[in-house]
Image 1 (cartoon, rainbow, N blue to C red):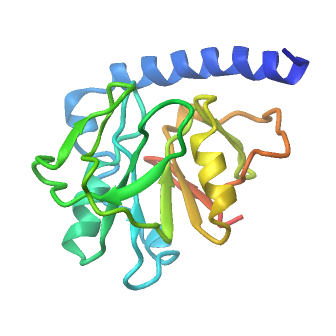
Image 2: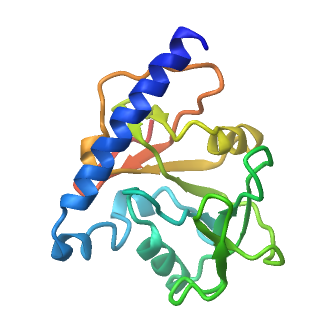
Amino acid sequence: MTDISQLKQALRAELRERRRTHAAALPQEVSALVFSRPPRPVLELIPDNAVIGLYRAADGEAPANRYARFFAETGHKVALPRIPARSAPMHFHIHTDPFGESDLQEGPYGIMQPALDAEQIVPNVLFVPLLGFTARGERIGQGAGFYDRWLAGHPGTIAIGMAWDVQEIKDLPIEAHDIPLTAIVTPTRMLGPF
């Protein structure tokens, strides 16, 4: 394991715990209000008729389910990732029921995802989960590389990170395969576009 890999591994453990602790400490009333609707500066980045890629939050991640409802109500197609196995590439499939989530099934990581027969689609705008971010738009994810590989294969995608404010750090160890974000949105602000 390289020095940068070891540094990232230790940083991920610290950021994972920071995120989990913060999300667990939020009062129910606050949790119900955050990330309920994208702020105007985020909406200004999104083209008309864009396909919106989101994620199903897990383990303290910033919740994206209300964004899914918002974009569905405003006429956008909404897609969620489908990961068949750790070594397989991530693809996006139409999320037809962001209100009841009846179209989702449990995936290999215990995260709900569209069924295998759901229509595959390529988002123009992708909201990305993360463990940590910098004020320059750099992100560190869980370490499997799904989002970096997907974004590398789809240049020009508007990639917007979603995070809690406590996930910001001054510096990240960056490698050539790490794809920067277009913007980052937290409960209190938007950073970018970068």
